Image (cartoon, rainbow, N blue to C red; front, side):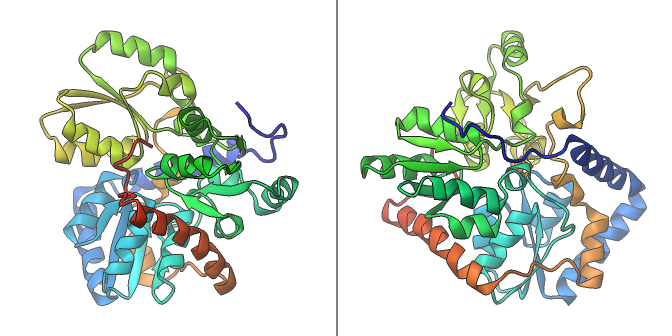
Length: 363
Ligand code: SF4
């Protein structure tokens, strides 16, 4: 894999453990049905009072996704979340996801108030690509086109030539390769390597990774497939190459959901955050969904197939943010305009090519 030789930043394991513990404690705290119902009703009232709409990612907890749909909001991947916010008339967008999603919503909706249940909801891909080190890296490769995944900070997006989602990354890199461009890719090394292999493009890869997808294990996945030979294996391309090689379908969150509807299989083994099962089961209630194996026995929170930062979104934090109007996303206007250039390039490309960026493509 043609990654950079130095590892600039790694998310501290103890930090991940403490976030996961906090998410777990919060989930356990509102256990009574009465309390849950009271919270849901109060959130519904507050959304109306504040002229707010809830926009949630597929990886959030089922309670959040259900409430989002019941209140006229939208459950989607990161860019679709931001685009929905743009089309919805509400003055306030409440983004249940991780910080870069709130930032992207604000980049595309500068006139709206964007709130998040917890501003500590980070992403290892974003954290592992700090702007200073990334800028130094870019300076060392001035001739390459800078293409960054949407899981990055506004500063990194502003530095890039292109921002891409997993639904359109393969097509844009193939296009740039055909134009004779060399690519500097960040931050996910696995997704970058997958695209490099598919397109044969000249790419150097920033060495970031997703702590959830990196944990899926190929050997255990092969064994599970032997037990369930009729199951289709669905893999997000942020997973290691050995896991991707076992996939029947490789794709973005939206593409994997679509595959559960279009394939004839009745069983699926899914290598992505287990929050996605809510939508898959809703769309195909008679099908069976299994988590792809991760570290198994003796595993830490790093291998529970659920993003600890996504877990910081829960009913209590949602109620709190709507009651107090706190946790607003504020971004610098110059940076926003700069980041818009690289995002608009992707959007214009998708329009020209008539591509749906929500992941109907292969990655
Ligand atoms: S699941 Fe991985 S890529 Fe998604 S927000 Fe969590 S750490 Fe980031």
